Length: 400
Ligand code: PMP
Ligand code: GLN
Image (tube, rainbow, N blue to C red):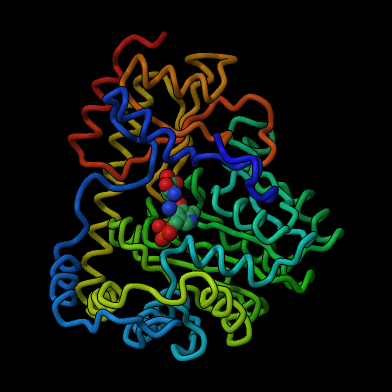
């Protein structure tokens, strides 16, 4: 029960689906393929750097906008992956994870009543940040592969009519998450070019959440919206160390944007957390600076995640789920339409925990307006191979 004095802008929000499913998984002793966190350690190279920096760091407030060493390392890494040069002094801001960068960006640009366009299904913290700013969430549907437009486009298809309507009505901010949680979609260059034209025409700001930038499969290429010339000055690009290094507890993120946009984001960042743990920042910087190590690490990371995806996908397909293409992130969406026609995603999630000892996320939690019953569950494959094999064995139990 929440206190009745809760500010009205938070009404309608409860405990996050990720926390809820993790607690349910614990209570049932289920394999947790729900919340997206690895059940293995990230690279030893970073752990050793953290240990060394705990000993040598100053342990006082870091500079509000981030340790200079990390801002420089981030600017170099962002330039290498996107071709966009950002000035580490004025255009790179270090935040407490991508979550804080999202909050700061939305609250920096959205006034009460402003319209914010978000592709749906959408990551939960966008809706919370928009509500906090008093903005109006304008969802643009990604049509599922089992719907007519989704089938025609061969995957999660943008509803261009909804995007055009949003442009006609005007909007202040567009939120794009690619590679996309929960669908695993990697937006194509053609889609991005069209989105860039819409953002430009609206003269809006685009917040691009690229936390899964390193996790692309089958040779897919992640392209940043910020690399399109006509919107470079309008994009706040967000990423973090959490997914790339497999340590979601680090909470070291960054927002890179043109100077004027950056100073707006910095203002909100200053008013919320002010600054972020210094030794974690410099440790991440040290690892990012080691470019040849990073190249080898990222290649290995992709190979290992692709194998994990294949392992889980094969087990789900064998158990009767349908799993469309997954080009990015460490999530996959699986349809249970053939296994349990008409059952809701929430009911199927509960059923899977109770009968198979496996926790997944019911994706209706990712919709502002769920489009009727969703025969989908989201599974995380950022787990040890033995965890995935245990899940595979449990999936072979009888279905109903
Ligand atoms: N954006 C998306 C799409 C995510 O899935 C996550 C994962 N938690 C985040 C942002 C948050 O990143 P961080 O842990 O760095 O706050
Ligand atoms: N991003 C993670 C997921 O999608 C969860 C983050 C969280 O628990 N807040 O599963």
